[in-house]
Length: 534
Image 1: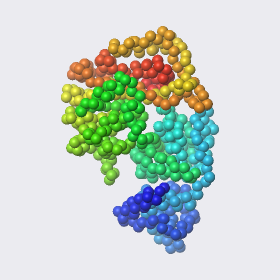
Image 2: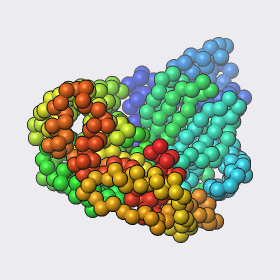
Image 3: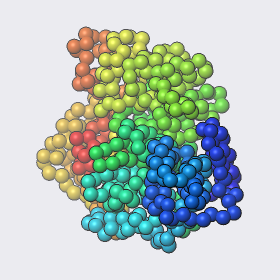
């Protein structure tokens, strides 16, 4: 940790102490730091986030952090009734420095995690042993570092009855990497909670964000940039941490893998000064990445761009980003924030997610009054999203005309070109493919699959799974006169199937059509398409 960061940490802690009416101690200024190991075991020091700073027969002074609970202070006062117990606020940096004295870092070899296609028993044993030896902060840094190296999207910490399982999601698939004890996991969760500003004792789901550099025991520096989601489960707090890359250059339309037709649709839509653009799909399908890539393209000096997010996941220069949760901890909804934002004269607004009727109607009203509004929406397809929007807004031709583009997407694993193996599919598979081909829009030439070859994953020592990275299956529903006419019919005639049929007749490729072309070009497998699309 640099001196500047340490000074900032001490200043903010001192300010916090004044607000709370507590005394403050800068542990850097203590000339002696005696250890009182007989007062509390180091496991309790980790769990409670307290440090005994001074001790005599008459009294104990505990150093506490901003994450030490009032319940902990009450418990300690009751535990040491025969002595005068006092408390002073210390910085997280000061606490971490003291814990290095109580729990000196061991010489640990941080082996890189190697995920193979066979049994993972040895891997789980190796990683588990590493995690059982290191400090809590190092556990978090090591997991993050390895997840980055393996291009994992998420780290899952899951409490089982007898142990805690840790898994990494790589290219959309979960891989177990460790099993640790509940006691050890409590230390890890304490480090995560402190860094993400969430509570370890909350009985509700929480969200947090970690952006920091961690110096590990082997002196290496690890960048930790995670969105943290916690939920209380029956065996303990489960956590999912999503990894982010903060490089703005990563989020451009050129890197989204759009083909020429898809790119033209997006360029034509975002070139317009108003309208609503929706990115649709489940969690982890790349919706936010898609929207941020659009925003980055739109981000020029002559435009004012404002985002409303929960939480703010990426930070970009030139864009005003607003969190739904205020700095005082009070939470408002997207609709309230959006109405306030519209008074700031933006050209482009991104709403992190449309979750309710009020937000949907406010976003549509904004798109009708000269704003380009981008947002995400949870639905299984573009047609399903439009059906839900109609349910929300009713048969309002003005609102319908405001919708410019609904883009649904899924991520599937891409075959490794170096190891993939060609094969001739059986008659049943060919028939399935032919049915998809027959449903293509008339504007597209139907491919001949009489002599088709498909591909399956091969194996190599460097890539035991045969996949390398992910690609997106997309469908782009552009609002057309044909769709508008359908949406003006009686509600009983408006269904997801009818909307999709009308869109396909107008030239839309569904995600299944997109998957067909990916199969024919040897980019993925039928098994992967079934896994993702069903």
